[in-house]
Length: 180
Image (tube, rainbow, N blue to C red):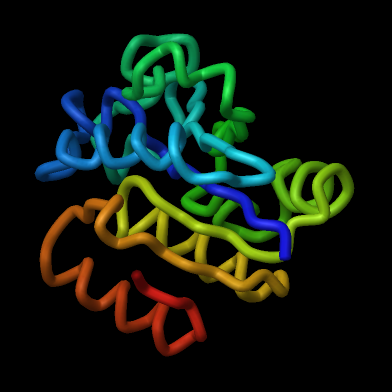
């Protein structure tokens, strides 16, 4: 069984910036350790990569504007070459929580078709990152629908609130996602 690591949106704006998730800094050393010590066939880092005036800025503070420090990965820079970047939320009119699809499911990223299936024939995913109750959840739900075995490593994730995180974990479990 070929396994991949998906690191969801561990970006400066979600760790210490304009849309910081509580206690997000705690997962940085955990994710760094996973990258360095766990053998995966593929390691991916997703990025919210918004144009200026992105539709999500009506609901959330301005965050992860492409080519800004806030959109940069919040991990140690020497780890960057080990990760394949996947950009999401690039359409000014549609938000994208999932690493696989825009929220309207009309457009997809290259993650599933190019990397996971065509280039690396991956069948199982470990998912970590920010935020458990939004981008991690929607990535995991789309992954299970696409036929992957999915593990959310909850010890390496952080959510926006305890209540929405608990609801998201229940929803993921109810959909066959393994919560570790």
